[in-house]
Length: 289
Image 1 (cartoon, rainbow, N blue to C red):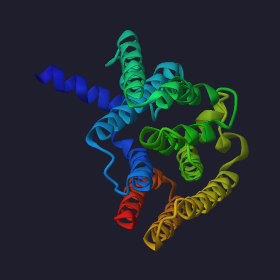
Image 2: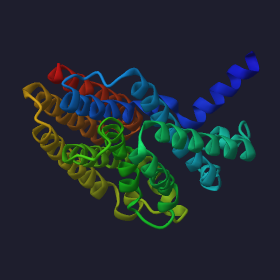
Image 3: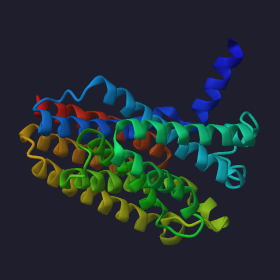
């Protein structure tokens, strides 16, 4: 039993499971908005609830494990990442590949059980999720690729419920994409010197700290615009718009914290952004009921 718990702990360390809070709220925002529009209720059913969670978790597991697999040579040189299970030997290369394939298969099977469009999009989505790990080796656009990877969450949610892609889901997707890219820029400031020394492409390593802070703030401003457009396009009420305003305040505080003290980047990255996703869901949920 103790060995099994140890394996689960190693897997949790590998994929940083707690960071699932970034994408899950936006999948369910999309699902409840879609359900309200076609069914008149936010209840989209227990089957889609379970399949939605399985798709979200398996897709993220695939993306994180694939990133750890292809980045092992980089991670072992970086003091910040040298103790990851994929680097220090707790999870071997073969077991890591089994984990990657198993989650890819689970994602595709669950997508197939949802509807035809979800199944058709499943493999392209996995390709995008894996693309982030490769992009940073040749392009600073890797931050945006990561943003799109999480931005696909609301697209997946509306496809699951409505079997189509709506304008409001695309606007929500774009907002999430720039939100994630913006906070990834701040997080990447930790590895700015390492990226320079190892020839990795990131906006901090190429353009420097001040430009990165400016671009991150610009991305987050664009985020708020897209989320306002999402609320308008989806026909949501005043409470939803208040949720966007509250999100803008959280993002402002995030930048304030990072500008004041770089050592608190982790706090800004996880704590504030984790709260933001959950809070935004709550505002949309209340608006719909």
